[in-house]
Image 1: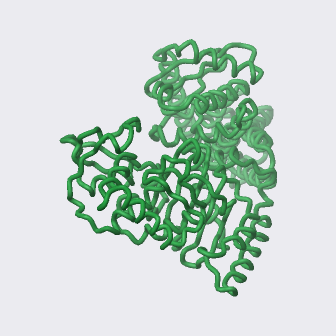
Image 2: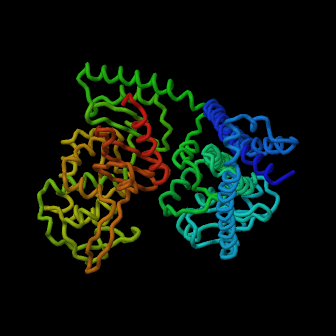
Length: 573
């Protein structure tokens, strides 16, 4: 067998795979569309088989041509004869591409090896946690846990002797249950030998680097792989939604560092879609359309009935709530309301008339009462012991500190500083008694029939309201430019006691990509859970979102993102 025959056969195999892989890609796309509502493992298997066929087809064609005693008959026809002269150049170009891609792969392996060498052993208690998780997930051998300072998220490295690398910053910066959820995700990769499969994918990408179908199949495999690992990890956790919270927290805490594709990391895949699946697994995604259509019609009918009786949000939310609750939007918050200010109707609701603690959302009312008094914003006020304990994390207001009233307002609303709100009430003209009287008058003027506020801070569990009443509070607060300006800043630099400090908004969504927030306030306590209210602009509409009693800021943020996605993706709104 002459070298020229080998080059010709290889060249023709490469040319033929151009259209063969395109047909295979089209068939795979159709199969994935049909399987869009089933388990991710089925879609992963389809992609893996298709990628394997992309490799096997040209190899089989090459062997067939080499087995012939003469060139293939297809080479003898005139158009093919014209291409025959280009075969050496084609094979040379392909060889150069494979060489470059192989170099890329080797450099990636070298980088992974350096990661292993630089990592240090994790504390023994964390290794014990990982070992316990491994046993729970069916792994019979211990998987070493190592710490590395330069990673953005946990990753799995190796397949003969796999290890899990954990960013050192996460060990102290993420709650233990959430970090355990991420580790369970990595162990799922170990259990499935995903690192080895990922390495084989990289080999396929190197050999067929010129074909877009190969890159598409490989990328789709990696996305489905993360969904499969998420599902396995969720099964091993007491609360499967811990992993969703962990992924959301990871997206907030880590920078978008680029890492080689050889790593199998928790940040892979379509992050928002993965979080939504974990928070509310959907048996059949294809059923979403008709499930949303019926409630939308009911909601429109309820709105028409409200308008016929001359009712709006302040007086009759229950009719709209009864219809919109059928939307069954899976949110973690126990009480939720979404109100379209422009149309004057409730879009979504969940137990919106239940009276529950609202924690620091109270400070919106405190700010309005203080601003109504038209006091000197530059008047300097002294913080005293009566303003409460200084146990609030990163409190800037020690006893005796002198602070302008306008800065106290900013501290009360942006980082939700308790002592600032207490000081604003104490220094109200006539003292705390006069402030309490003005507060009750404000409650009556806004028609808050189910709201009871006994302190200006929100510490007391007796500070209660409903999601419906909170929406009215937001509507009133939006008329104060100072409140809107302060609460829509992601952060601000201020001078307190001669030192410049940076204040951060307690709502991490403010300033986030895709969010147009016009007013915001959070609240959190043992009794109230995690609360959030926002006035946002979405699709040209002004909307009020109220979330009360969620299980932590992470799930509260997920609820808000889910609501925004539902509104953005629905033409009914």
